[in-house]
Length: 402
Image (cartoon, rainbow, N blue to C red; front, side, top):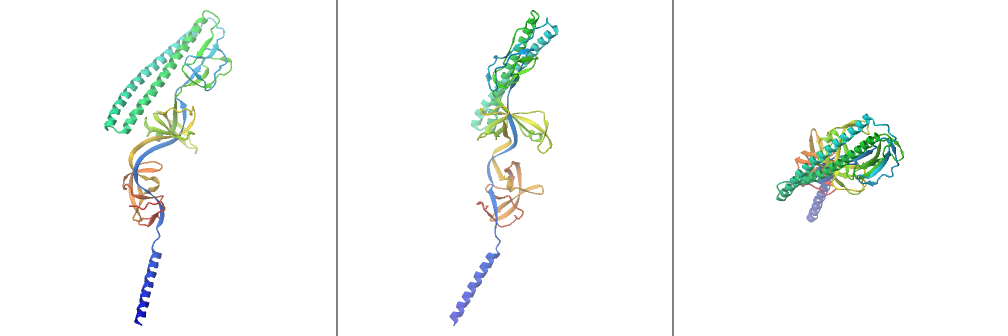
């Protein structure tokens, strides 16, 4: 009998223990599933994203130097022309005896063209001196970067500055050659006017291309009578630049020499460019929402030539205003405001722990952590309103905290 009584007691105790375990498990809180990500170090950049378009770096309009009947222009869009080649011929009307006023005007045009040519040559010399200085700085930087005396980022900046200066020198030479051709055109017009004083028959005037370039537009295709200064052909240089209009409040953050990444141009890779200039004056533009905005054009040059793009093509530009290599960063989706301060939920031992953080630079996806977090700690992404300090959580993507 005693054995049976003890057996019943043991079974009763076991049943009570089982019931207690079941009740405890039933009353235990269920962890809330959350998405998480680890805090880590890496490269980070802050960009200003905007739409832009390409345009030729130098554009020249060849105009009629004298009045008269122009012969039909045989050139078409896309044709290449060499400097000095005849692009049009103008037959002036029979001339009256020499007009002193016309002669004075023509001589003034020659003098103006010569002054512009002199100015262009002066600019070439100034840019050449700047390029020599940039080249010397780059050569010194090559030696210093090998010894670690300057950061690699500063070396890249000097390298790009030297390359950009060389491009500016080529553009300056291009404009100087164009100015020299304008002098020749003005002198040809002067010769025609002077001959008019000797004969009533004016010689045919040959209009020549001022530079080697590509025909963008033929403005006067048909044979007709034109007035002096009538645009005939629009030529362009080979080099392209990018024009991006940004808000004036963003333009002040952009510096010459900053990197630009070109996307959305139709190809499957990102093109590299470099900011050359932020235009000194802005303009008013009405946004798609009907709001007037003050905007500024930012001009950038391609680091490498790329043939598929032409004048007036649409692109999407990312202008870098800040970047660093070794930055402690946290996903932007983990941050939320508490008053004037930023906070995150950190996963510690399966619990959500509220923690205030201090952040620095931010972009759409990441933020620089200055204080409050350590590398490899895990934070909750997109924290919902039910996430509270001390709540049991379970990461559905594998992060469980430190």
